[in-house]
Length: 126
Image (cartoon, rainbow, N blue to C red; front, side):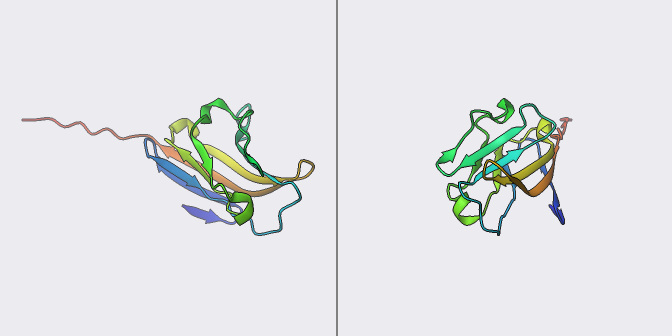
């Protein structure tokens, strides 16, 4: 993982159990905040949305269904990190972590995730 200021570069092997997309927010949250993880090249672009009363995944892109999670106390702790289970090569791309009050959205972190394909070794017996 390499952190170049605002953009974080992270890589993982396809087939890994999970990958963590880190995002930490240290400012005061807005009133009635919600957290948004997005990937702009997808439609819908929603990867994960967290409100004060829990996850709101009704508009989540179906490729992430049942594969994303956040800490239950994310809004209290400022740890907005997202866990993506069973990463696939198609999960590679630019992810954005933002916080919003429904009027204004503040981008907190951008992460470029690279998912490396599995390398299969062929064994011959002689």
